[in-house]
Length: 370
Image (cartoon, rainbow, N blue to C red; front, side, top):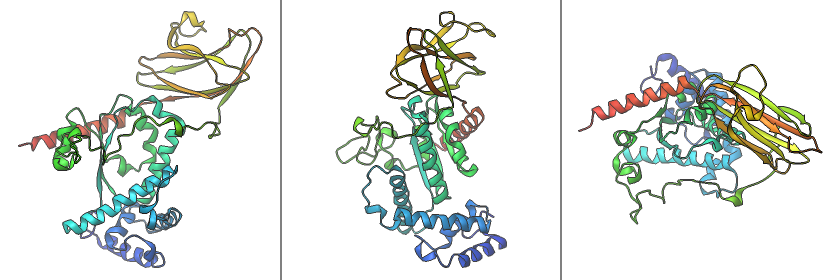
């Protein structure tokens, strides 16, 4: 049985009744008390009563903290998490309105995620941690609310980015993530009424002024305005600290086994600037000077004593990559450098699976084309 209204096994029906009984003290504070709402939490925890109850009670506390009943009228300051919580509440209420309008229960939403412009700069660790917080908030407070998530315009870096955040998603949610190919506009029209899709995305919807992007309805994002920039707001913890003596360098080697991996680094120096570059070794098993290796990320001096430096590089070929901290130009001062380095792996298996699902959906959709 699916565990949905009208399709419950005797065990599931009994669990629903007991679930409702256990929650009598908090039901009045919930946005809904019907079976559709309660079954979402039970399905999210496979009808495990203690786990489902703990999940829902935690949600009640979150709603109090977020002042969810009044959040629609709340004007967002710099609190991203609460702003996204409000977005979820807007979608939940929209589902309720559509249920009344259509005369049938609407519980889930279909989302389209435009990944155009996704690049290495978005894989900055504090940003990834923030994405994780947002995904965790969604998973814990809005279970069984996502029908499908279509990814369009996915760049080559997408498998790496997805691998960084997928562990925040439940297995059920992961199965709903679908990467569409070059025919994504045609596929969207098979799942969404073209009248509800902006012309920019292959539909017929425009703004009243004829804008094909429907900019009044969609925030296309872009670069963060500089007046939002802050410095020294995050206490960065580094994995390694070394002293690079005057007139010398410090090299760190990483073996990359297959193309598409991303080297990501963060570092700061104390007292003065330091040089940094990335090289690919031409001989294995021995230390090489910079001039003997292939420079793949140009060496230059960074004022990392003033502002911590972070960056990344996509390794196009396997091999031994060397991150080199350069102090050869300094004849007087040693440099203390603290740094962290990660190798980000593209999740080839998951990427292939969601791509295959996308191809399958494309084939099914197009096979029903008139």
